[in-house]
Length: 336
Image (cartoon, rainbow, N blue to C red):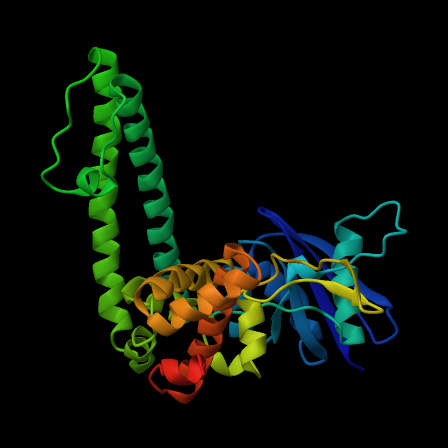
């Protein structure tokens, strides 16, 4: 008899539920987040378990690794797609864990991607770089705002990030100190960003697909790294359309009787890939004549936002074929 296990994982504990093919609950238990204890608890069911479904938004690495090392098949639940019965008055961890196992038994458990263990560190390092860039942008905006309030003039963002930038003396001592603190943070963050970029580029350069992605209009080192590391194994996407959907480059809507009845989950997919292809589209429409012509034509038919999204969709499909077939970008095929 096949068994099914669901784990509702929290920051300091988890709730386990094991059921059989008739939804009979064989195990319901709350445990501390101790991998040895969890593996030991599930060990007697291992031979009959189809898989272990883990529902977590951020802290699943350690548990997935421990279970896989112990010989369990692991499924990472896509929390954005889990649908609960709306008629329920009350739910708790016990029900949530059972619901995961129940959906797995029915074959309708929405699953996410488990990034290979040896690739997670580099992918997360690239995400850390993005967070640092966003932090630096906040300090630059704050510095420019303070300067503009005092003088009515603006400072160049590129100048502020430059090594030779000297902070103008404006306002009183307090204003100057506030501006200096922002500038010091910009300098520190810039140094850290460059360090991360050097380390990431050194490792990604070894992947043949990296240079092929850079042949795409609008894609340089950072965007190619993001696309490569966030995509993972391209073979997990059956078609280019599936990949474009994962990149949030397709419209989300519900149609009935040829009428729009609402929208689906527009955030279902990878937000980092969504950002990467929008950035690539912005660069492509400035530097590639065919991409610019496509954008202008779509813009005339709709508006600039939809036109940019359509161009990002085109580029995502192109990158799918580049990674799958290991070929260089060909704009004549993309914009034929």
